Length: 344
Image 1 (cartoon, rainbow, N blue to C red):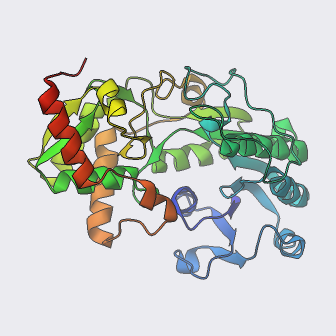
Image 2: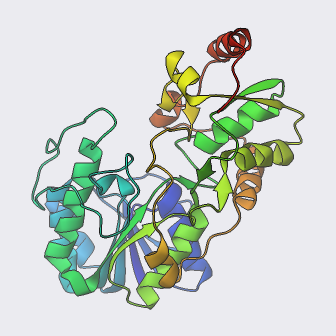
């Protein structure tokens, strides 16, 4: 199988390339990077996806059985890329997000839920950010989905909509932050209640499913998350303690109290968000199409091993936005003790 990956050096792209190499596929990557983490295992083409001359040059390097686009964020650019590659590639797999749904994260959803409208030729300024609702990122990704279908047609296009993706090489720093916080031990502020269910998917399972949709020629859109109810926040933090051999203690603080203390959801306490739909994403279609997910404990363990082995945390700009300060954490815990409340 001949595969072109647009991107391929960061988190999701890296996992897809690794899985394809392990499967014996011929892999080409296209990106602007100056390093090649795969050495001789892939054919690397350097270029900028926003430059027509670079895209034209890329097309001459085909054909490919499939393209996986992990770096498409602007609809008009995705349309240009897909149209250029349509004559030299059999399928187009676009890596999207559950943020394309109008009601995420407020309401539970499935693939039949309403998707934000964005024209396939829209520029980078289309869409707006609303508090606790649709974001420009979601609008843009929805437009990119439309662009892929416009260029390749519905039968030759696969749309993958992951929720939260965790695992080795995660650059956003959500799971790495929790691991680093837990390994320092002491009293750890835990958000909400330990039985809150969560649905993160391991990046390696996302990669395996991506390749599976190509071999099976599975068209259409798929939500790619762990099954509902397969993991809990309490289990996640227990796994962090087990993997790091930490004797940290967890104090679970009620959602309303945290909000009253000005704790920011999703960023200051990663993966914590109170809306009903955050972790209620129906994945039945993906499961039926071949998605298989490993236990969250293995994701936590392997992420910690990667962190220890690589000595990395994250150099990505987004990692700077993740995590509550130790000072604020201590203040919230002290206020919680004074209140005498307990998690509901």
